[in-house]
Every structure is written in C-alpha cells, then in structure tokens.
Amino acid sequence: MNEAKRIATKSAPEAIGPYSQALADPISGFLFCSGQIGLDPATGSLVEGGVESEFRRVLENVRAVLDAGGCQPADVLKTTLFLVDMSDFARVNAIYGEFFDEPFPARSTVAVAALPKGARVELEVTARRR
Image (cartoon, rainbow, N blue to C red; front, top):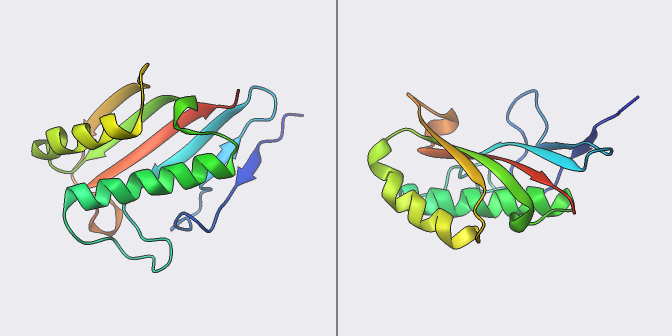
C-alpha cells in the first residue's frame, strides 16, 4: 500500500487545523504542500508590514517545508496563489519572480473573500523530488 509520509518542520508555522504541512508520496516523489500564510513560526502571529512582508514570510515558510520534504524551489511544478485583494497582484508577482527561476512553475491565482488569521496572501505548492 502507498503510504504518504507526513512532512513537518519547526521552521514553518505549525498547522492551525487538522492538516499536515505537507505530504510526500514515496513512489512518485511528489510533495503536496498545504497553503502557507505569513505567520512567523516562532510566534504564530501574522507578520506586520503589509502584503509584501507577508508574502516574503510566506515564501520563507514554503522554503522551510520544501527543505523538510527534500525539495527546493526549482522542484516546484505548480502553485496556487490566493489573494484577498487583486490590487496586490503586481507587488506579490514581483516578489514571486524573485523566488522562482525559469522555467517558472505553472500557477493559478484566485481572489478570495478572506484567509485565516486575517492574512492577505496564501501560497500552496506541489513539488517533485528529483
């Protein structure tokens, strides 16, 4: 039977609900990461400073989960970006372009009414270990 391996790291915020930070499929090598918001893993609080600061923290959290799962940003194949306000898209997109290199992952961007803890941005990623 294919048993997914739970991935957890203290370098990213603990799950705030009944879910895992990520699950790794040992057969395919895929790593399915839950969405990350801009929580400081040390305090569990949303970082201050607006959407840019939040998204930089999101990416630090994503990197920590990827590292724990044996992946790096270059291994990310697909992302889903959630924004509370689509007017933040350009600012978030510029930071996104600093984190990922070409060929960039496939991406969907979705406007949402709200995110947990009052966050303005969330990112979910799927990666595959090489």
